[in-house]
Image 1 (cartoon, helix red, strand yellow):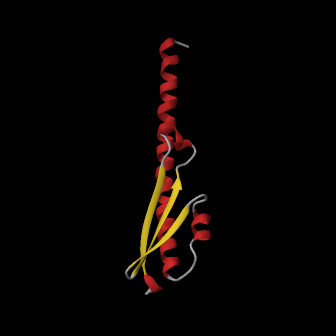
Image 2: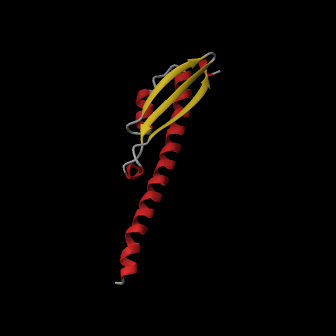
Image 3: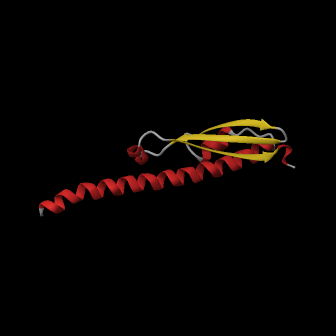
Length: 102
């Protein structure tokens, strides 16, 4: 093995780890957005959202906020384990649905 190759391998591994962490964060954000949309529709019908949010995104927390004729849900979760390479990242998504399911 040459010295150049030995110097490049750690850099390639670091770039790969950061890239995979970023992809995991993007997937987690999409999961949170889907969970927020489903939870908003469920909350608009008067159903509890805690078990729904936690079953869709383990470790996520949901909160309901009425806004006039809308019911809005915000879902928060920590980043994925590999994404901690990028630092502590808190993700959130929100969605609203017409209250009463109309």
